[in-house]
Image 1 (cartoon, rainbow, N blue to C red):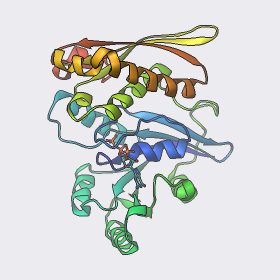
Image 2 (tube, helix red, strand yellow; image 1 turned 120 degrees about the vertical axis):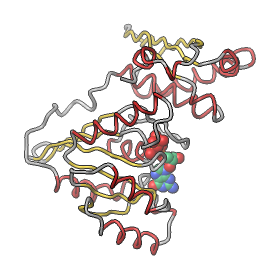
Image 3 (cartoon, helix red, strand yellow; image 1 turned 60 degrees about the vertical axis):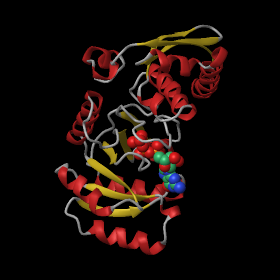
Image 4 (cartoon, protein in one colour; image 1 turned 45 degrees about the horizontal axis):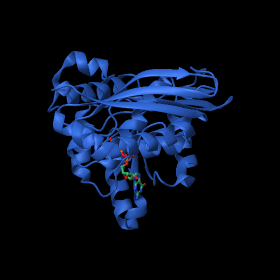
Length: 290
Ligand SMILES: Nc1nc2c(ncn2[C@@H]2O[C@H](COP(=O)(O)OP(=O)(O)OP(=O)(O)O)[C@@H](O)[C@H]2O)c(=O)[nH]1
C-alpha cells in the first residue's frame, strides 16, 4: 500500500482546478477561464483499496504578492510545498517555458516532481516534444508527461507515475471520505464561481462569499450566504436591475448545490458592502483566508 500527499502547482490558468476535478470526478475546485480563481488549498482524496491513497491539494496560482490577499496565497503555496510527498508542476504547454522553469527553480523544490504539460490538445506534437526535452533536463523533474486535463484517458498513466513516487504507508483517511473541507466551503465556492462567470473583470476580484448558515432540514438544505463587495457601486451591479443579476447568481448556484448535495436547496443571498476587505486581516480571516 502506498499513501501520501500530492500538491498541484502551476501558474494561474494552467488548469489545476480542471485537472483536480477530472482526477477526482467531483466538482470540488471551481473552474473558470479567469485567473486566480482558486484562493484556498483544496484537498481531495483518491483511494484504491490495498493499492494507494493519494491526497491532492490544489494551490492558488503563483503570483506576485501585490495585496495582502496575494501574500496569503503565496503562503498557501509554500505550506503546500512543505508537506508534499510529490509535486505536480502543471504547465500550459504553450506558456513561456523559461519563465515557468525560473518560477519552479525559485521555489527550491525538495520533493520529487512530475512536470505535467497541459492543454496538449491545443499544441503541435513538436511543441510538446520540445517542452518534454526541456523539462526532462531540469534537476527538480523526475518525469514529464503530456496531458489534457479535459481528457480523462491519460489519467491512468499519470496516476501510475504518481503512485511510483509515493512512499509506502497506510491510508490517512477512510475510503468514503472525499475531502476534509466543510461542505459549507464548497457552497461558497459555487456562488463565487457564478460571480466569475456572470461579471466582468472588476467585480469578481472585489467579491468574497461568506456562508453564514447551512442547515439540513428533512426535505431540503437551507443555505444563507453574503456576497461581500468593497463599494456601493459594485453592490448595485451585483444586484442588477430589479434584482435580476442576484437572482441569476442564486438560481445557477442553487442548481449546482443541488447536484452536489443530491438534495433540494433553499438559497438566500444578500450583498453587503465592506470597504477595503482585501486589505483587512480580520476580514480576510472571517472570509476564510487564513
Ligand atoms: N483546451 C484545453 N483547455 C483546458 C485544459 N485544461 C484546462 N483548460 C481550460 O483552461 C482554463 C483554466 O483552467 P483552470 O482549471 O480554472 O485553471 P487553474 O490553474 O485552476 O487556474 P487558477 O484557479 O486561476 O489558478 C479553463 O477555461 C479550462 O477549461 C486542457 O487540457 N485543454
